[in-house]
Image (cartoon, rainbow, N blue to C red; front, side):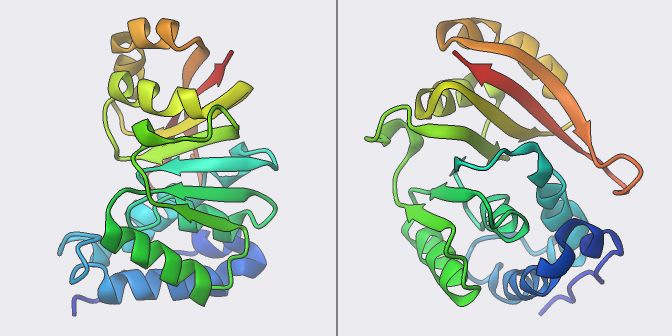
Length: 208
């Protein structure tokens, strides 16, 4: 097994008294993630900095309520955010059976009673615009993501989507989709500067 990255000092700041749960999840993902097709072979040595903390640092952006994570995959950001924000109900939306099994196992083993796992593609969501916010990480370009995420969010709810350096140009490229799905005030925010070596970038917007 590839050695997992040593825990950065920022982890304790971001997780507080929930740090032990974060450690257990990171260890499990580092140990089983590759063989279960959740992460690539290059990821364990940068698991904390590139994946866990990148997800955790956006936790304060969410208000208490019910939040969907579209394409939750390995639980990035969904499981990480459920650890960091026990006051929020997280709905992890994932179509692939083996990933659904992993998400269910981890939420049970970690005692995360604020997690619901739904096996579905976002476009097959049957419950209507009921979520207070939706997040996603490494799913697709914003112009593809908006039609998948905005219909799940109630009027006045938020999209809080983890993006890379291309976030600002993705907003420009998604202008048509943003208008069509009544998504307003789309902007790029940088989170974690001064705390993380590589801060996270999110596209935030309101669904009307």
